[in-house]
Image (cartoon, rainbow, N blue to C red; front, side, top):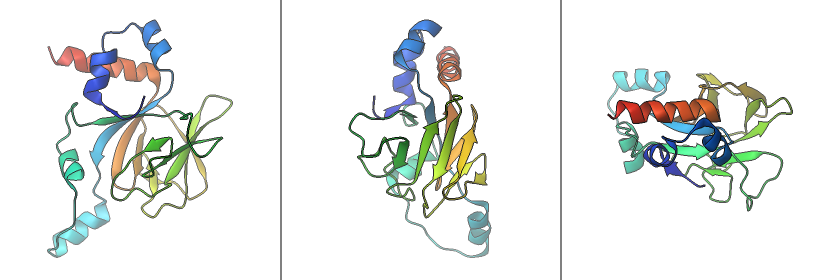
Length: 177
């Protein structure tokens, strides 16, 4: 399905029944939250003045709307490089390409266990992978629950299972009216 905005998903899936939605989207998603500023970095910035390079997409992420928030489906691409897991990074040939500053070429990967539980594993990324604010040790698979915050470097996402995502889309559709 590729990268689409939250507004695209609202238009396409917002009015679908539970059954129709389940046929169309059976994988969990990452819904963009925004750019996260590390508390340690925030404290340093209070002490001294300096500037950081921020590209336009990252600057706009501070003002996210459904038209700018991206949604990434957590699923294996047919033409992806690695098998056995769902890869995440800024390289276009990975399953989930988050082409942003601070995301490593091959940052992390997701796996779905036989029990249906998803895990995320950091792949020695420079800026880390975090689940609900806790850093994922490199090489360790950490379980993720619905509505968990997953952060790759400074880019935060909400992990959502399909049915809660459908309900979220419908709530946004209702709130617009």
